Structures are given as C-alpha cells and as structure tokens.
Image (cartoon, rainbow, N blue to C red):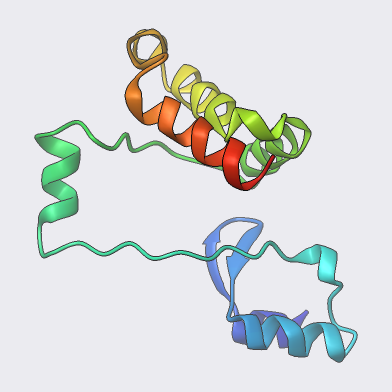
Length: 125
C-alpha cells in the first residue's frame, strides 16, 4: 500500500519499520490491521567504533543474513515457547543456523542465562 510505504523504512524484504504513531494511523485509516505490526521497545547505544570493536575483538556479537521467513519462524517459535525459556531457545536456534553449535554448549547454564530465567520467573511467570 502506498500510504504504508510512505511512512515505512525497509529493513529486509517483507519487513519494514515505522513509528508507533504511523502504525496507529494506518490501522485507524483501515490501511493495516493491528496484527500486521510487532511492537518492539528498547534502546541500545554505542560510542563511535564500539559496536565494531565488540564484533571484531570481543566476539560479543555474531552478524548473519536474515530473511522475513526466518524472522517469522523465530517469532512463532518464541510465541509457542514457555515463558521460563526467556528466549534462550531462539538464541540457540540462531547460533545453530550460523554454525556455532559449540557456542550453545559453552553458554549453557552460564550466570547470565540463569539471571535471565530468574528475572522471567519473578516478573513474567
């Protein structure tokens, strides 16, 4: 739809983003349905060069190609997972898809995952 394309920016084929206000307006005007949108809220910020350094030097991030098909599969997986999983199975799926199965085993039952599960248990369960 031209109205949706006008207020959206393509991320990858089949996936775009827009502001919450634009999404609400598209729904109000009947151009889109609420189900057409995912609401993602958060903030991340890096100093100049920091993210690249974290990718190159610290191995904190893994960069891989994605598709709208993969995103939909991951969203469906997350939607059917138990709350206590806290998204860890989605992370494991992504690591396996980019050939980092050994990373899955290295990271199992690490403090960060245990803390994420505890946060989920106390706030979401």
